[in-house]
Length: 267
Image 1 (cartoon, rainbow, N blue to C red):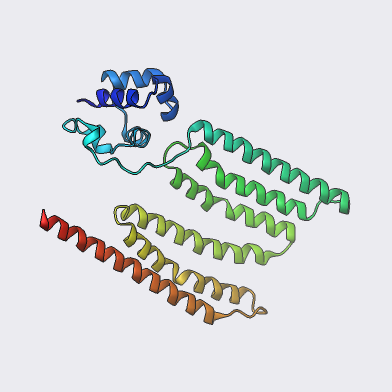
Image 2 (tube, helix red, strand yellow):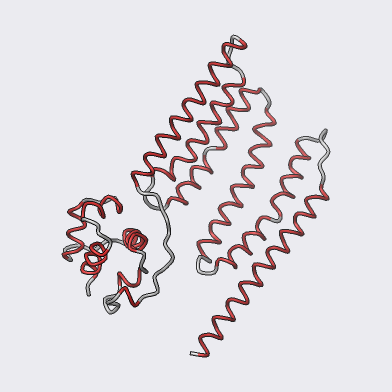
């Protein structure tokens, strides 16, 4: 059974028209028709979407020798928002953000005859909206695009907040903390990309990456804010707990790895 025949069979089994399936995959009906007729082949991103929609493995769709989906162990369904659902959420979030910003600006102006704290709130709302935007408008590589935006937004946000509050330490201290956090986030993202088939191992390495982060932030804060007393003992205690959790994750990964090896030997 070819890929096109499988798509057509699964579509009919689920009572979907070509138009309905096209809307779920965010392509045209003609594209679905070409896939089913074998005139074109969906790329890997669309294969992954079809796999989720039909609740079958990608291997079943790609490999011709796998003919009957009823014989396959159906994978656990991943629930994802349709493009229409994303648009609805985007409209609701945008409207809520706009209303909240306007209410803050109006209240601030009529209570103090000028704009002060409301500008900080408005800027923060805009920054949060921009960070959320990629997850609602992107069709592929959502996590990567979201991380790019999250990495880019804090620097101009801190600069604006520093100007509004007229405190340069907000920018200098904020930049140092932000760079540490962003570096940790990207390292963790790389770990999960590398170890996506071994999630417990990925969690273990991610926790190891997090150990020095609060310690570094506390020392930097102590440097920029010498008048504030920071508790370094709690950082050491939290690092110990994080290390213990990391070792637990590695232990679970080790047990699962050897369990799979024993199962393979028995077969």
